[in-house]
Structure formats: C-alpha cells, structure tokens
Length: 276
Image (tube, rainbow, N blue to C red; front, side, top):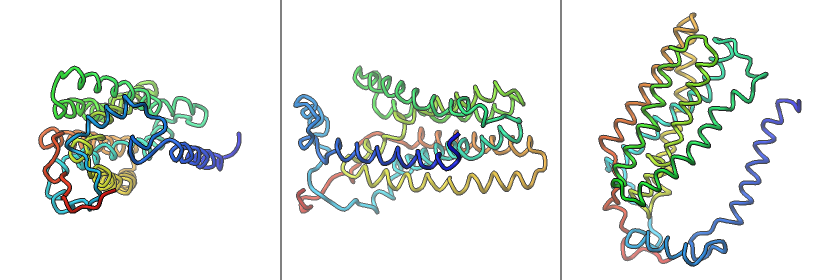
C-alpha cells in the first residue's frame, strides 16, 4: 500500500530506534548501569569471578586460531547461517515460482517462519537456563544437546520439503518448523564464545560471524547455478534443499564432536595488560 521503498524505510527506522535504546540502556560494566539492581550486580560479578578481567588486552589471535573448540564453534555458525540464508534468499523464489504461491497476498504466512524463530528462541532460552540452574547436565552437554534442535531437526525439515511436493500447507509447516527449532541456537552454539573466552568473547564472536556470513555469498551463487543447470525447477530445488540439510547436519555434528563450553587457557589476561 505504501510502496516497495517503505520496506527499506521501516528497516532504517527500526534500526535507528534500536540504536537510541541501546545507547540509553547499555553500559560497559554492570557497575555503571543505572538499570541494574544491587542483587543483579552481585550475581553477575559472582558468575564472572575468576574468568573475566577488568584489564584491556589484545586477543591472542594465534592461540584462538589454533583452538579446536573455537573452530567447532565457527563451523556450527557456518551451518546455521547457511540454512538461514537459504531460507531468506531461496525459499521465497521457490514458493513463488515452483509452487505458484502468492506471497504478496499472503505476507502473514510468509512471515510465520521468522515469527516462529523469535518465539521459540525465547522458549529454548528459558529451558536452557533452567537446565543450568538445576544442574541437569554440564554446560558443554547442554550446548551439544540443543544442537539436535538448532541444526539436526532444521536439516531434516529442509530435506523433507521436497517430500511435501507442491502442497503449500506442507511446505509452510516445514519452513515454520525449520526456523522455529533453529531458534535453539541461543542455547546451543550462539552463546558459546562467552563460554570459551569471557575476556575475548566479542572478538571471537566477530570472527565466527564473519566466517558464517560468507554463506551470504555462497548460497545465492550455488542456488543460481543449479537453477541454470537444471531446467526442471523441482530437480534444482531438491538438490538445493538437500545441500542445505547436509551442511546443517554436518556442521552440527562437528560441534558435537569437537565443541566445548570450558573456559580456554588463552582466556587469561597477562598481568601487564592495561587497566580499564
């Protein structure tokens, strides 16, 4: 109704509002926060004791790049963002051109997968926190357990999309399940950089996300090449979703085999580091 340009205007407005709220609410430390209670400050300090330094230091990049748990984390994020970019870039084309789905007339249905991801991430987060508080299992086991939901089930949903054939309802259900279960990333690998290195979590997350976001280049190129190679859209889509499911599953398996939630030795900050 407002025109296609408003899709971009709304995004800019949302980002501007987010930045304003961020600058008002977020501080460098809990002690500087006006919105944190004394009890919460104490809880955070007790949780970080022995692992988080108040001194500034350059991340030990060489040791980070030699760390197997760190590369397991990067691999998990690579698989996660491959699946997410596939849903974002290829799924609308598949639904419109292959299934004849009128996305413009059914924008609400098209948004369901992302709404499911938002809601389910909150649910998985609550479940993960309760499991930690009750010591149901170690943090490492919790991270690996939720890979089943964040990677393996979404992988199965991708592969099964072609089983649904041209049934709109079946495809929508599988896409919603794919993104809904993928919301478990908030307690599987997405927070793992803070487990491995509380002092350098930001740097590790940045590296991890940079590697993962390369899928934003790979996925459209591969999908486009397969569509050109196969005149039959059904064959092309079957291969594209199969690749997506395999990448999801293999990357999740790598994290289960080599991932960890133990604080790494290279997290320590040297005594001669600069005080904040």
